[in-house]
Length: 522
Image (spheres, rainbow, N blue to C red):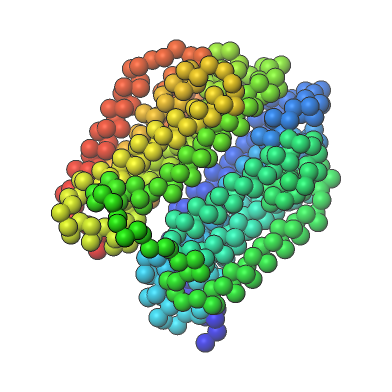
């Protein structure tokens, strides 16, 4: 029997399981890219406006660190500049999630052992996971290339292929990490950490030079994407870097997969201490999630430092552009531009914090479906105590990371701490509403619990793209974040904050009531 026997069946199975995840993530990424030309046209409608933008970016290292250098003043080149790094990072996240889900997740749950007992080759599952990620990346490339063809066919094709290349580099990297670790959560976290390091290296390199020529930029796959120079005399040879890196990493992953048993890893988890410490549901939840809390905490603090340091430079860039000022003020409220920019960036971190709270809440679902919750509940631990420990980590962790983000802004911006910290903490009721919806879905309809990711994605999409598209107010109001006061600079309004807090509490109560009544998954 060939080592690839059964690959086709497993690919179809993977695509069927991800029939919601892949279209959602690819659709959000495509929409973000394809709406940008019209937005940029309204911001920089004349050649003089675009030439002025290029001159300002040449001397604004903070904006180059945030977005990257721009190589031409066409709408296509500006689109690749404005969303290229973020679209590439989103493509990488999509690919790594797919690969880990269909490799280490399957082994951790025990399903892979059942699959391997049939007529399935040793490397079929890994191949199917990589092919599923490749299909998602290819669809993204086709949609982006087709949608941007009007800006220049060659540039559109280069940009689409670059996004697909970024996705496959991190897909194959996730395939390697999945062989090294025993935990799917750790595999996702480590690969995401590499992606974060790639972003930091690119940002450091771009802030040092104005043409993407820094060594640090070339070390990062996200730096390769911008140095592909879509719509600006394309460097087609850069695509060879993506192909070469993906091929080498895939070969390493296949080599590792052939040398270990199903369920094992090259870096096995260390046994816990002989003295486990206080035995409680909350202590167990904290031990299980402490790595994620630490990673998010460090990430949010560093993001606050970076965005705080960029505040003055960003304000200088958009200060002379009425439409750019309008978008920033729509995201951050009608106030002084610096306060509006701070409010917009803090609001963006609040949106991202909703992803943390969903991931943390859904740890309950993972513990239940994997069978690990059953021995815990077989002891003198009630369902509400067990769930309450995880929810304390989820909702308390959200408060912690937003507080650390605020401290990061204070360090980076170097101004008065009180208003900035208050602006970060006022995001929590909206974050908790998203978490409350995840609790409600998990408690009442556990099979629909993963749909909480769709809710978080929709909220992120509304908050990120809505203001730039001049979406109607009723669309922005669909997000709980649309009802928060715009701080700093705006007027504090306790009414919406109290309503959102009460709604979050009601959603959590409904989810716990459903959990208490229903059967556990077996």
